[in-house]
Amino acid sequence: MQLETPGVSETFRYFWRSTYSLFISRCVALLYTTALFVFLHIQFILHGMVFRREALAEKVEVVAIAAEAAVEVVDLIAIAAVAQVATAAAAVDTTDTNPAFTRNCKVWQPCQTFSFIPELLNMNILSSPAAGCMRWGKWGLNFTTAEYRQMIDSCLEAGINSFDHADIYGHYTTEEEFGTALNEAPHLRNRMKLITKCGIKLVSPNREAHQIKSYDTSYTHIIESVEQSLKNFRTDYIDVLLIHRPDVLLKPEEVAKAIDQLKHQGKIHHFGVSNFLPHQVNTLYRYAVIEFNQVEVSLIQMSAFTNGILDNCIEHKITPLAWAPLGGGLLSDEIDEKNFRIAAAAKIIAEKYDTGINSILIAWLLMHPSNIIPVIGSTKIERLQQAQEANEIKLTCEEWYMLWRASTGEDVA
Image 1 (cartoon, rainbow, N blue to C red):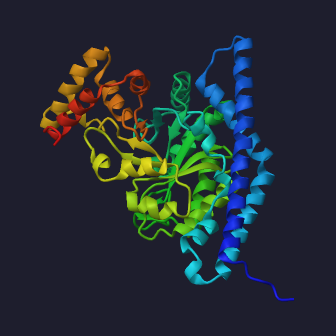
Image 2: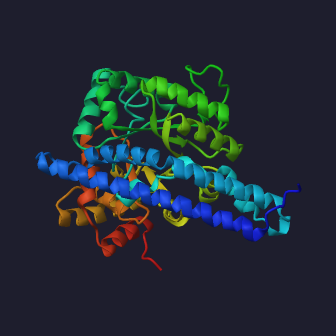
Image 3: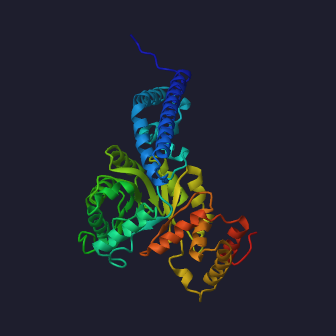
C-alpha cells in the first residue's frame, strides 16, 4: 500500500489542532493556578499572617510547577502534533513550506510553556533592586564569611532577594565565598534568587590554562561553568544564568542545546544574556528563550535608550537588568559639567519627594516601560535600601525629561 503525503491544507489542519490543544492546556494551567492562588490568599487572611509579596511569590512558583505537571500530557500531545506538522511540511513541495516554521518547530522549547504565569500575576522573578556582588569579594572590600552573611541577611530582611554574580568575580573566588557564607544557613537559599554569568575566560592565577582573556560560549564551557558555579554556591540550581558578553564565535545551536539540557535537569531556571545588542539578541532568540539582558544603563550612560536595546527588550518581553545604574559613582565627581547638571536637577526633584538623589536616579530608570531592574553593586546596605525606596516614587514625565535634559545638555527635539 502506498502512503499518501499530506497536502498543505491537511498539514495546517494538524497545526490548528495542535495550537488548540496547547491553548486548552494553558487555560487549564491558568485556572488551576488561579484557584490555588486564591486559596493561598484566603489562608493568609484567615491565619492573620502578614501578606508578603516575596513569600507569596515563592508559593505561586510551586503552584506553577504543579500546574505544569497537571497538563504535561496535554502539552505532549500538542508537541507531537507540531512535530507531525513539521514532518508533513518537509514532505510537501518546498514552495509550500515555510523554512522559518520548520526551524522554529525544531528549536521550540516546551519547558517555557508556563513561563507566562508570573507575568500574568504581575510578579517579577527577581527583586528590584538586585544586589550586585562583584565588589563583595577580592575585587572590592574582600568580605569575611561573617560579613558576607551579615550582608546577605540585611538584604533579605529588606526584601532584596536577588544576588548578581559572575563566575569570574574575584578572579573566580566570589561565588565560592558567597556559597561558604550561605552554607552556614542553607535554609536561606529558598528565600533568594541567584544570578550568575559565564562565557568569559579571564587570565587568572586560579585559571592557569588561560593564556589570554577570551570568550567561550561553547556547549562544553557553558555546562562546565554551571557545574562549577553550583559547586561554588553549594546549591543544586541557579535561578538565572546569563551569557556574560557577546561572542563573535557564538553558535546559537550549541548555546540552546546547553540551556535546554540544564533546564531539563533543573540546574538553571531562567536564561538571559548580558551586554548584547539588539541584532545579537535577535539571532540567539531564534534558538533559545531569552528572559533577561543585563546592560549598562544610567543617566551617565544612556545609549541603551537610543540604540534599540531597551526597545528590543520591550518587543521580546525581555527584562533589562541595569548594571552601574548610578553611573558607577561618577556622579560624585562634581567637577565634570555633565555630572554637576545631573546632580543639580536630581536634587531639586529629590526635595519634592523628600528623598535622596540616589533614589531619584533609580526612580528615573524604573519609569521606563521596559521595566528595568537596577543591579546595585554596592557593599553598603544603605545604598540598596535607597534604591528600593525608588519603587514608591512616581516621577512625572516632565521631571523625567528634566533629568534627560540634564544629561544631554539640551532639550529634546
